[in-house]
Image (cartoon, rainbow, N blue to C red; front, top):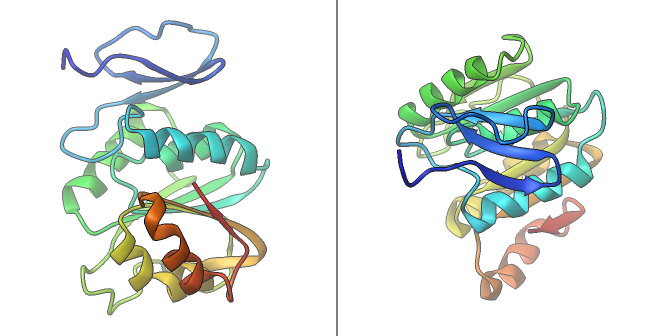
Length: 188
């Protein structure tokens, strides 16, 4: 617990462990207990995604966070004005952690849904149908991003936004090849 301290990601936007007092009670504070799930706000790719969401999310948006981990990105999107967020992860502990973190942040239980995905991607974990998300964010590794390319593109509304992160610079070209024909892409 000592290693996880409040992190300011943007002006007036903090990620705060549940055992700490928010440094700025007037700011937007995301309260987290990450447990064993990925996503504390300290990792550079998480920070990039949070900054991208801050620029991308509009009031009323429907968000998909693929690889939700602690739920940090979905929770942030809701606090930024999204009306609904769906988190998906292959790790049952992450699904549990993200649901608990949504409760810690006093989110409307209908505003945040979380689902487990099969590691083999054979079953569609998102029961909302194609083309329903205004913003899709995935902060996962290259191979899962490539495997999920068609699904991610399919979940995205026409003219929707997709933010992909968790890759290294040398992998960007490969990722663009898989995604660029289907959607407008932001690599974070």
